[in-house]
Image (cartoon, rainbow, N blue to C red; front, side, top):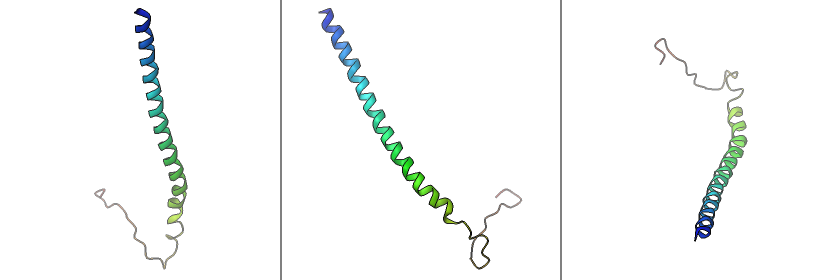
Length: 70
C-alpha cells in the first residue's frame, strides 16, 4: 500500500515535469522562430530609409519636437 502511494506520487511528479518541459520547449521554439524573423527583417528595416535624408530631391517629412515637448 505504501509503495503504491510512493510510486503513484513519483509518476505524478514525472508527468508534471514532462508537461512543463513540453511547454517550455514550445515556448523556446516560438521564441527562436520569432528571433530569426526579427533578425531577417530588422536589417531591412534599418536600411529602409538609409540615404534618403541626404537627397534634396526626395520629399521627406522631418518630425521634430517643439518647445513644449510635443
